[in-house]
Length: 64
Image 1 (spheres, rainbow, N blue to C red):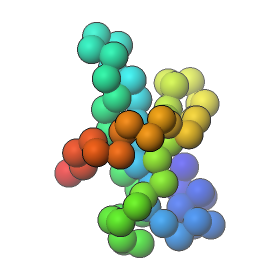
Image 2: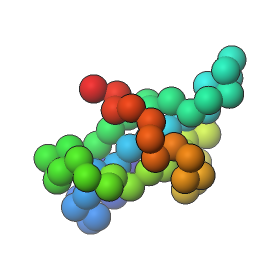
Image 3: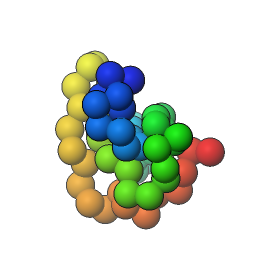
Image 4: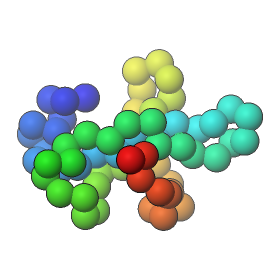
């Protein structure tokens, strides 16, 4: 994932769906040194596949 940060020069937040609740949880945040405003958001499926997530996760709290 770090190679994406190098080229994009923006923060990235990675989400994964919680199996028990079905809600999205932040599992990683990268590139915080590029700022915290409007990070790129990706949804991880647990096996090397990422998707653009639905816009409903925009208000999810930071992992930190």
